Image 1: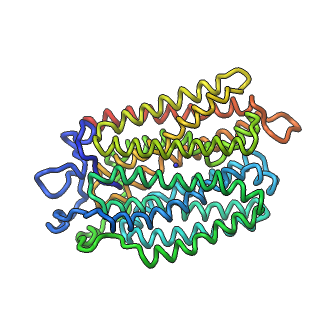
Image 2: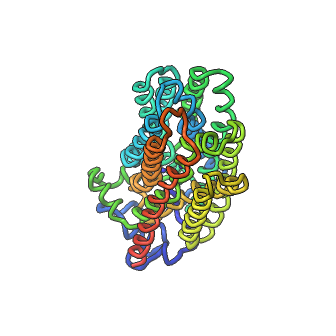
Image 3: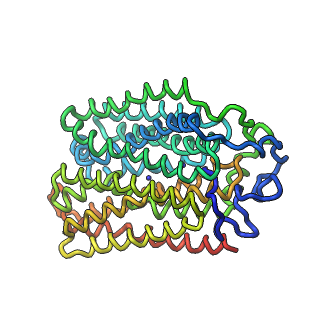
Length: 461
């Protein structure tokens, strides 16, 4: 498992005395964390996004791009075993595909945030669609490891441009109190792309073959590009010009430092890091091999389990969106609950004798991991609430790096351990190898939890 306006009710976390969130009502028109420069014009301060049908229409166009991005991003998750056979590679090399894609995604978040702040989300979305389609088309016809790897990097670059752009469109069109719900709904609908991958793509891959399947996904970007180009409006009629046109533009380095120096941005990044990566690493690459090779499931059974994870995420997205919209005080309790239950379920599954937990425990694990993606969006809510509008994209990009950095570390760690634990002469990996390798994810889980606790205390001060 890139911003959105503030929750309706303040909490001790959302309104500390010395560091008030950017969207908490105050007497003065300028937020406490505003960047240096002249204050926005009174018209900008008085404007309230209207919401309504036009807002939902604009948002739906952006979400269409995000769904496409999720399909591109997770397409390798059901093709891991096929990719190993096609390119003749082992677990470490296979994990490199997803690691590079995630590395590019994470590394692009701050540049993309700056682009959104400076040229607007519509142009960034169009560029993202073009890059994703080009990368996926090259991947469809690659027969060697190196060009296939390069194509996934291009795909990751385009993918990185989608989520932050959609959230900026939502922030311009919807009232502040509505945004936490809209953000969760964005993640929920985007999860539908994952469902397409696990259900449709898995079947198409074996029915139509590698090149036809991935080539079709690439060409899907053409109509999406045209629709966004023709119909998407970044802001409602009567909206004031963005702040970037009303005040001197901050140098890039200064804008990044200003966003990073805000503890709310860093707290958001670590919340995203810790809550997102378990389900992300599982869904991006290692879920299907773990269930098929490690647990002895059929491909159809493993696909059903991954679909359960996706459906669970959609349900949790609705629940968390409602809770966070009602009160900001629910943000960290939700995150800590998700972390605790995820760690508990993985510990139980990995500690099971012989590395073969019962089916009911695997089902519970899928349901629990479904909460990871929706919980990670809480991190973006912190980044949005503690930064002024003119650096929303930059702060959201920093926060959105977290989960993908955690995923990258976990993907690599599991792949290296699997290769180290593989039986000599064996083509696959046994249950014991998966049992030990998947213990690696507990390390970033502990690190992230410790950083959240540290930054929460700093924010309270």
